Length: 240
Ligand SMILES: C[S@@+](CC[C@H](N)C(=O)[O-])C[C@H]1O[C@@H](n2cnc3c(N)ncnc32)[C@H](O)[C@@H]1O
Image 1: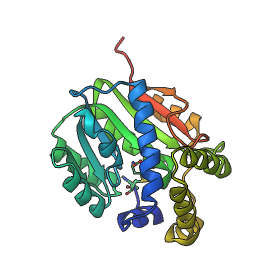
Image 2 (image 1 turned 45 degrees about the vertical axis):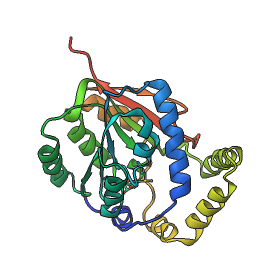
Image 3 (image 1 turned 60 degrees about the horizontal axis):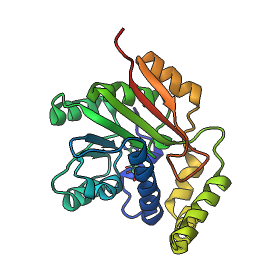
Protein backbone atom coordinates (compact mmCIF):
# COMPACT_ATOMS: atom_id res chain seq x y z
CA UNK A 1 0.00 0.00 0.00
CA UNK A 2 1.45 3.37 -0.94
CA UNK A 3 1.32 6.37 1.35
CA UNK A 4 -1.41 8.72 0.19
CA UNK A 5 -2.20 12.29 1.13
CA UNK A 6 -4.61 10.84 3.67
CA UNK A 7 -1.95 8.60 5.20
CA UNK A 8 0.33 11.60 5.61
CA UNK A 9 -2.54 13.68 6.97
CA UNK A 10 -3.50 11.14 9.63
CA UNK A 11 0.07 10.44 10.70
CA UNK A 12 0.44 14.05 11.84
CA UNK A 13 -3.02 14.66 13.28
CA UNK A 14 -3.35 15.76 16.89
CA UNK A 15 -6.90 16.88 17.68
CA UNK A 16 -8.88 16.60 14.40
CA UNK A 17 -12.67 16.26 14.91
CA UNK A 18 -12.38 14.59 18.32
CA UNK A 19 -15.79 15.45 19.81
CA UNK A 20 -17.85 14.16 16.89
CA UNK A 21 -15.52 11.17 16.30
CA UNK A 22 -15.87 10.15 19.95
CA UNK A 23 -19.67 10.43 19.75
CA UNK A 24 -19.87 8.47 16.49
CA UNK A 25 -17.53 5.77 17.83
CA UNK A 26 -19.54 5.51 21.08
CA UNK A 27 -22.71 5.09 19.00
CA UNK A 28 -21.08 2.34 16.92
CA UNK A 29 -19.86 0.51 20.04
CA UNK A 30 -23.34 0.54 21.63
CA UNK A 31 -24.91 -0.90 18.43
CA UNK A 32 -22.10 -3.41 17.99
CA UNK A 33 -22.44 -4.56 21.61
CA UNK A 34 -26.18 -5.11 21.02
CA UNK A 35 -25.48 -7.19 17.93
CA UNK A 36 -22.67 -9.18 19.56
CA UNK A 37 -22.90 -8.79 23.36
CA UNK A 38 -19.26 -8.52 24.39
CA UNK A 39 -17.86 -10.80 27.11
CA UNK A 40 -14.81 -10.15 29.33
CA UNK A 41 -13.08 -13.08 27.63
CA UNK A 42 -13.53 -11.56 24.17
CA UNK A 43 -10.42 -10.42 22.35
CA UNK A 44 -10.85 -7.41 20.10
CA UNK A 45 -8.40 -5.88 17.62
CA UNK A 46 -9.18 -2.27 16.70
CA UNK A 47 -7.21 -1.66 13.48
CA UNK A 48 -6.96 2.10 12.88
CA UNK A 49 -7.86 2.77 16.52
CA UNK A 50 -7.22 6.54 16.38
CA UNK A 51 -7.23 8.20 19.82
CA UNK A 52 -8.76 5.07 21.39
CA UNK A 53 -12.46 5.88 21.44
CA UNK A 54 -13.44 2.20 21.07
CA UNK A 55 -11.26 1.42 24.09
CA UNK A 56 -12.84 4.34 25.99
CA UNK A 57 -16.35 3.13 25.17
CA UNK A 58 -15.53 -0.43 26.25
CA UNK A 59 -13.71 0.56 29.45
CA UNK A 60 -16.31 -0.99 31.77
CA UNK A 61 -16.54 -4.24 29.82
CA UNK A 62 -13.09 -5.70 30.57
CA UNK A 63 -12.79 -6.81 26.96
CA UNK A 64 -9.19 -7.66 26.04
CA UNK A 65 -8.24 -5.00 23.58
CA UNK A 66 -5.43 -4.53 21.08
CA UNK A 67 -5.29 -1.40 18.95
CA UNK A 68 -3.11 -0.33 16.03
CA UNK A 69 -2.71 2.98 14.24
CA UNK A 70 -0.29 4.86 11.97
CA UNK A 71 -0.29 7.92 14.26
CA UNK A 72 2.30 7.75 17.07
CA UNK A 73 0.66 10.61 19.01
CA UNK A 74 -2.64 8.66 19.10
CA UNK A 75 -0.84 5.45 20.09
CA UNK A 76 1.02 7.17 22.97
CA UNK A 77 -2.26 8.69 24.19
CA UNK A 78 -3.97 5.27 24.01
CA UNK A 79 -1.15 3.63 25.96
CA UNK A 80 -1.44 6.27 28.71
CA UNK A 81 -5.24 6.05 28.93
CA UNK A 82 -5.48 2.26 28.75
CA UNK A 83 -2.33 0.77 30.31
CA UNK A 84 -3.73 -2.77 30.40
CA UNK A 85 -4.54 -2.83 26.68
CA UNK A 86 -1.94 -3.21 23.95
CA UNK A 87 -1.40 -0.60 21.24
CA UNK A 88 0.83 -1.03 18.20
CA UNK A 89 2.29 1.62 15.96
CA UNK A 90 1.85 0.51 12.34
CA UNK A 91 2.53 2.14 8.97
CA UNK A 92 0.65 2.71 5.72
CA UNK A 93 2.70 -0.10 4.16
CA UNK A 94 1.04 -3.51 4.42
CA UNK A 95 4.28 -5.46 3.90
CA UNK A 96 5.82 -3.62 6.88
CA UNK A 97 2.63 -4.13 8.92
CA UNK A 98 2.72 -7.87 8.26
CA UNK A 99 6.09 -7.99 10.02
CA UNK A 100 4.98 -5.70 12.86
CA UNK A 101 1.86 -7.76 13.54
CA UNK A 102 3.63 -11.12 13.17
CA UNK A 103 6.21 -10.04 15.77
CA UNK A 104 3.81 -8.36 18.20
CA UNK A 105 0.86 -10.72 17.97
CA UNK A 106 2.67 -14.01 17.53
CA UNK A 107 -0.24 -15.83 15.84
CA UNK A 108 -2.77 -14.53 18.33
CA UNK A 109 -6.35 -14.74 17.11
CA UNK A 110 -9.24 -12.39 17.91
CA UNK A 111 -12.99 -12.74 18.32
CA UNK A 112 -13.48 -9.38 16.63
CA UNK A 113 -11.35 -7.27 14.34
CA UNK A 114 -12.66 -3.76 13.66
CA UNK A 115 -11.95 -1.51 10.71
CA UNK A 116 -14.06 1.43 11.84
CA UNK A 117 -14.05 4.65 9.79
CA UNK A 118 -10.68 3.97 8.23
CA UNK A 119 -11.05 2.46 4.76
CA UNK A 120 -12.18 5.75 3.22
CA UNK A 121 -8.58 6.88 3.78
CA UNK A 122 -7.07 3.98 1.80
CA UNK A 123 -5.82 4.73 -1.69
CA UNK A 124 -7.71 1.93 -3.47
CA UNK A 125 -9.89 -1.14 -2.96
CA UNK A 126 -6.76 -3.16 -3.64
CA UNK A 127 -5.30 -1.75 -0.40
CA UNK A 128 -8.39 -2.96 1.43
CA UNK A 129 -7.98 -6.40 -0.14
CA UNK A 130 -4.36 -6.53 1.12
CA UNK A 131 -5.32 -5.43 4.64
CA UNK A 132 -8.14 -7.98 4.93
CA UNK A 133 -5.84 -10.67 3.54
CA UNK A 134 -3.32 -9.78 6.28
CA UNK A 135 -5.90 -9.59 9.07
CA UNK A 136 -7.87 -12.76 8.33
CA UNK A 137 -5.14 -14.97 9.81
CA UNK A 138 -5.66 -13.12 13.13
CA UNK A 139 -9.35 -14.01 13.19
CA UNK A 140 -10.53 -16.97 15.27
CA UNK A 141 -12.46 -19.62 13.30
CA UNK A 142 -15.65 -18.15 14.82
CA UNK A 143 -14.38 -14.56 14.66
CA UNK A 144 -15.92 -11.56 12.91
CA UNK A 145 -14.13 -8.88 10.94
CA UNK A 146 -16.25 -5.74 10.93
CA UNK A 147 -15.77 -3.12 8.25
CA UNK A 148 -17.86 -0.18 9.37
CA UNK A 149 -18.69 3.33 8.19
CA UNK A 150 -17.96 2.51 4.55
CA UNK A 151 -18.62 5.22 1.95
CA UNK A 152 -20.09 4.20 -1.40
CA UNK A 153 -22.09 5.72 -4.26
CA UNK A 154 -25.17 5.95 -2.04
CA UNK A 155 -23.35 8.01 0.60
CA UNK A 156 -24.68 11.53 0.88
CA UNK A 157 -22.82 14.11 2.95
CA UNK A 158 -26.07 16.05 3.43
CA UNK A 159 -27.88 12.99 4.83
CA UNK A 160 -24.86 12.16 7.03
CA UNK A 161 -24.62 15.73 8.32
CA UNK A 162 -28.36 15.65 9.09
CA UNK A 163 -28.17 12.38 11.06
CA UNK A 164 -25.16 13.74 12.94
CA UNK A 165 -26.95 17.00 13.69
CA UNK A 166 -30.04 15.15 14.98
CA UNK A 167 -27.84 13.03 17.26
CA UNK A 168 -25.96 16.08 18.56
CA UNK A 169 -29.28 17.85 19.30
CA UNK A 170 -30.59 14.73 21.09
CA UNK A 171 -27.43 14.57 23.21
CA UNK A 172 -27.36 18.35 23.85
CA UNK A 173 -24.02 18.56 22.01
CA UNK A 174 -24.76 21.11 19.31
CA UNK A 175 -21.34 22.70 19.97
CA UNK A 176 -19.69 19.45 18.84
CA UNK A 177 -21.57 19.62 15.55
CA UNK A 178 -20.62 23.27 14.99
CA UNK A 179 -16.98 22.43 15.83
CA UNK A 180 -17.06 19.54 13.35
CA UNK A 181 -18.46 21.63 10.50
CA UNK A 182 -15.93 24.42 11.20
CA UNK A 183 -13.17 21.80 11.20
CA UNK A 184 -14.32 20.44 7.82
CA UNK A 185 -14.50 23.93 6.36
CA UNK A 186 -11.42 25.59 7.80
CA UNK A 187 -8.79 22.92 8.57
CA UNK A 188 -6.25 21.01 6.45
CA UNK A 189 -8.94 18.34 6.08
CA UNK A 190 -10.69 20.49 3.46
CA UNK A 191 -7.47 21.03 1.50
CA UNK A 192 -6.55 17.33 1.64
CA UNK A 193 -10.03 16.20 0.62
CA UNK A 194 -9.90 18.41 -2.47
CA UNK A 195 -6.67 16.76 -3.57
CA UNK A 196 -7.50 13.20 -2.40
CA UNK A 197 -11.06 12.01 -2.71
CA UNK A 198 -12.24 9.75 0.08
CA UNK A 199 -12.34 6.14 -1.13
CA UNK A 200 -15.80 4.81 -2.02
CA UNK A 201 -16.10 1.02 -1.83
CA UNK A 202 -19.19 -0.62 -3.27
CA UNK A 203 -20.99 -3.66 -1.89
CA UNK A 204 -20.02 -5.82 -4.93
CA UNK A 205 -16.36 -4.87 -4.37
CA UNK A 206 -16.46 -5.88 -0.69
CA UNK A 207 -18.26 -9.12 -1.60
CA UNK A 208 -15.70 -9.87 -4.34
CA UNK A 209 -12.81 -9.35 -1.88
CA UNK A 210 -14.54 -11.62 0.65
CA UNK A 211 -15.12 -14.33 -1.96
CA UNK A 212 -11.52 -14.17 -3.16
CA UNK A 213 -10.30 -14.55 0.43
CA UNK A 214 -12.81 -17.33 1.16
CA UNK A 215 -14.71 -15.28 3.71
CA UNK A 216 -18.45 -14.93 4.14
CA UNK A 217 -19.86 -11.43 3.90
CA UNK A 218 -23.00 -10.01 5.45
CA UNK A 219 -24.19 -6.42 5.09
CA UNK A 220 -25.57 -4.96 8.34
CA UNK A 221 -27.63 -1.80 8.61
CA UNK A 222 -27.69 0.78 11.36
CA UNK A 223 -24.31 0.25 13.04
CA UNK A 224 -23.14 3.80 12.47
CA UNK A 225 -24.49 7.25 13.19
CA UNK A 226 -24.11 8.41 9.60
CA UNK A 227 -27.08 6.71 8.00
CA UNK A 228 -25.89 6.64 4.41
CA UNK A 229 -22.74 4.64 5.26
CA UNK A 230 -22.53 0.83 4.96
CA UNK A 231 -21.26 -1.88 7.31
CA UNK A 232 -20.09 -5.41 6.58
CA UNK A 233 -19.33 -8.43 8.75
CA UNK A 234 -16.83 -10.89 7.32
CA UNK A 235 -16.25 -14.33 8.81
CA UNK A 236 -14.55 -17.59 7.89
CA UNK A 237 -16.66 -19.82 5.68
CA UNK A 238 -17.71 -23.02 7.51
CA UNK A 239 -15.50 -26.02 6.72
CA UNK A 240 -17.41 -28.44 4.47
C1 LIG B 1 -11.64 8.87 11.47
S1 LIG B 1 -10.35 8.15 12.39
C2 LIG B 1 -11.22 6.76 13.12
C3 LIG B 1 -10.56 6.28 14.39
C4 LIG B 1 -11.27 5.10 15.07
N1 LIG B 1 -11.33 3.94 14.22
C5 LIG B 1 -12.66 5.51 15.49
O1 LIG B 1 -13.60 5.25 14.74
O2 LIG B 1 -12.81 6.10 16.59
C6 LIG B 1 -9.39 7.34 11.14
C7 LIG B 1 -8.18 6.60 11.70
O3 LIG B 1 -7.64 5.77 10.67
C8 LIG B 1 -6.25 5.80 10.79
N2 LIG B 1 -5.69 5.42 9.48
C9 LIG B 1 -5.69 6.13 8.35
N3 LIG B 1 -5.08 5.43 7.35
C10 LIG B 1 -4.71 4.24 7.90
C11 LIG B 1 -4.04 3.07 7.39
N4 LIG B 1 -3.64 3.00 6.12
N5 LIG B 1 -3.83 2.03 8.23
C12 LIG B 1 -4.25 2.10 9.53
N6 LIG B 1 -4.88 3.17 10.06
C13 LIG B 1 -5.10 4.23 9.25
C14 LIG B 1 -5.93 7.24 11.17
O4 LIG B 1 -4.65 7.40 11.73
C15 LIG B 1 -7.06 7.52 12.15
O5 LIG B 1 -6.69 7.24 13.46
